[in-house]
Image (cartoon, rainbow, N blue to C red; front, side, top):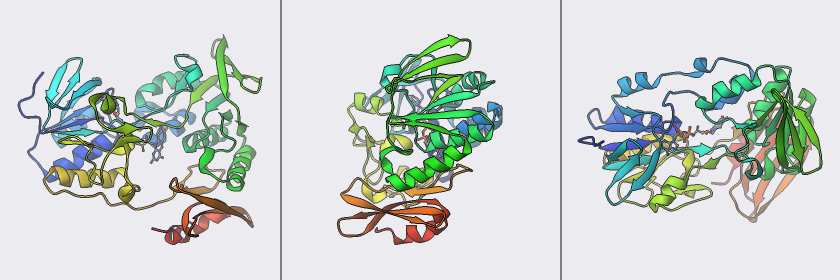
Length: 380
Ligand SMILES: Cc1cc2nc3c(=O)[nH]c(=O)nc-3n(C[C@H](O)[C@H](O)[C@H](O)COP(=O)(O)OP(=O)(O)OC[C@H]3O[C@@H](n4cnc5c(N)ncnc54)[C@H](O)[C@@H]3O)c2cc1C
């Protein structure tokens, strides 16, 4: 398959791929944009996936625009259900099962993978929550499930667990880390989050690993943990920390590590005409806090011949947990220490570097009200 004029090929149709296509079309009404997705290219809010599942909502109601609608609106050449298998940086082609497409400029928007722990890879009893395509399978599994084992205790896992508890189910959160939100957080703030969620009905098994899961009846599973526990549940879902998808870029010869595909401050991925955006990239420090929309706008400018650096605006993450107020700003990986203080009704924790500058924070309970002033005090 060869299109005559493949100006820009975007691989990945998640929030980042769509944002780039939209921003580019707004600036250039005539260039050819080809958008390739491994599965569906429908537009939906990924952050609503887990909560919709917990609430038993119909997956179709999450879709904000079908792939066809977007293709028509943005005048895209859209290829769905076609994983790109390899990239040839010399010939400048992307290769899929049905053929290869040449590109002038290539944008990698490959996102991230929510996997399962290594010991459970390939076990059909364990379902990751990551894609709209998973939803129907997950929905069937969740129908009637009361006790649900959630692997991972990161932000998405905490939100999902709280939502399940609100809907009257019994979530059990299991993670090898000793605190919710793993090693990102200091002990006192994390304990406050845990206590608030426990009060709402979430059961935590922290500092434990899941070793195996066996089906014991229809929609009934027995989980074995590293603390010699057996936990009988109706469903096992994985929300362990997502990993940037880097395999395709690496195989092509681009630099990529555990934190994502390496890019410079203009999102160039180290080969002529190749860029990367969204959850698959390891942003350099000058643009470390550039959101997906900011990246897409800057990249669209760059693709139109006006090299632009995305605006980087630090913002704290607020957990969408109705029973636990919690806000945090993750510090960069630098030397420093957490200083924690219990306040009436809350906890505030500051991460200060060796020069005494505020580089990160976590606020729990009533302390979240001070979020804006904490953000303003962050060292830039
Ligand atoms: C349950 C859940 C909740 C989340 N909630 C939040 C939140 O509240 N706030 C937040 O900031 N982030 C949240 N995230 C993180 C979220 O993944 C990202 O913010 C956002 O979805 C990243 O968009 P993306 O387009 O980079 O990646 P994705 O949305 O992962 O899209 C990747 C795209 O690449 C395609 N693709 C992958 N490999 C190939 C291939 N080889 N060939 C072709 N196409 C390919 C996929 O089909 C997909 O279309 C959440 C993630 C999950 C799983």
